[in-house]
Length: 364
Image (cartoon, rainbow, N blue to C red; front, side, top):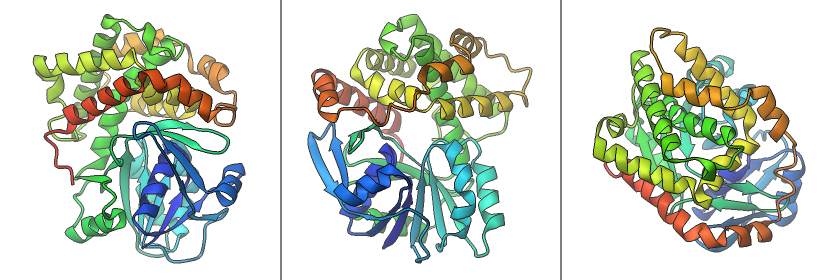
């Protein structure tokens, strides 16, 4: 297949690597210095849990190509997706997939469809990947060969759509989970991670400072947010996800896992690194949820408000973390040595969370 990937950060890099492994003709749209690196040296990834390094050589374009593509993936921070909607509407392809956090999925789908001169199918996906990009390579944390949850805004994919996606990823081992309501899934994901974000900023992006009461408060805040989402008429996805808060044994296990994660390198790789380097995206998610709360002003969320009010103001957070140097100054070998001691435990816990939360879902 001819596949276009718009954006090649940590998440996009793993996606490009996987699609190349599957034998697709992959083109990456990557502007600026990173595009030059890809053209000169190829896409270099160190896969942390797999203890291996890979190099791929996708086609690299600085602007949107005129060629026809079977699939287009736009992989970037959700607040940046809005800046490329016109280009996505004009791309010569019938299927466009927006990958990443996105509380404005419905608006973005509507805008792409309105701007496009040809019929398009807009899907939404989320790939569970953590890591950091340096000047010349990507350090990537992912379970197995990687995975993506994908679906329509409020519909299940057709058998033909599922088959096309399965063929795109071939026999790479990359797992696809098909959801029937990605707007609900993306909202649920956002409200699960926002309490982690608030706690991270409260402790200066060092979750090791959090105690058991903090983690319990974080889980209670997420439960409050799930209740608000349901009150707003938004579907809870994956189905049954809210049950983890209603079952004391399940909640106890999940809380314990989250606590142990906060004390390992995984808390940094999967949470605080992203908080440091994506302040604008985190503020965007927070603002979107606060707007959602306005629709249910009577819904009390004491634990949520306690965590949110304990962190610095967004202006202060931007002042602390918006240095513009996090992506370019990382020394991959130094970072690799730094995380080596805690990596095995972190990887095991990361896998445990994925299995615990997804073991009853239909992964394909």
